[in-house]
Image 1 (spheres, rainbow, N blue to C red):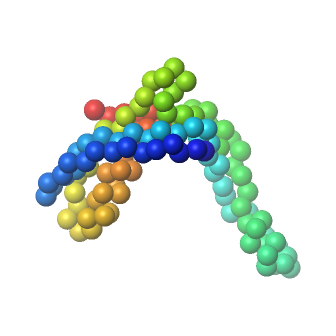
Image 2: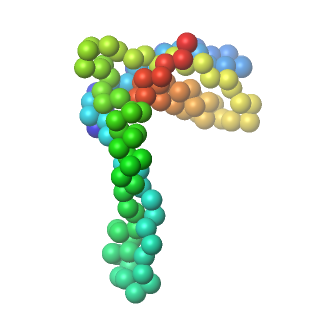
Length: 115
C-alpha cells in the first residue's frame, strides 16, 4: 500500500466533532492471520516467526468485496469520509481526535460514506 496523503478538516465543541477526511492511497491489500499450533520442541526463533498462518478465504473476501484498491478510484471518483463523532467524556482529547479520524479512514477504504 502506498499512502500519498491524508487531508482532514475538523470542527468541534464540548459534545462532538464534525468534518471531513480524505485518504489518498494506492494498492490497498489486507492479510487476515490466525495463530497456528506450534510444537513444543521447535526453536524459539522459528516458533516466533511461524506463529501466524494466513486465513485464505476471509482475506480474499476482504480484498475483493470490502476494501477498495485505491482512492481516487479507477474512474477518478474520490471518496471523502464524513466525520460525525460524539465525544465520550471519559476519553482524552487525543482519543476523541483519533476516533473521529478513524471514521473517515474506514469510509474512504471501504467506500461506505455516511451522510
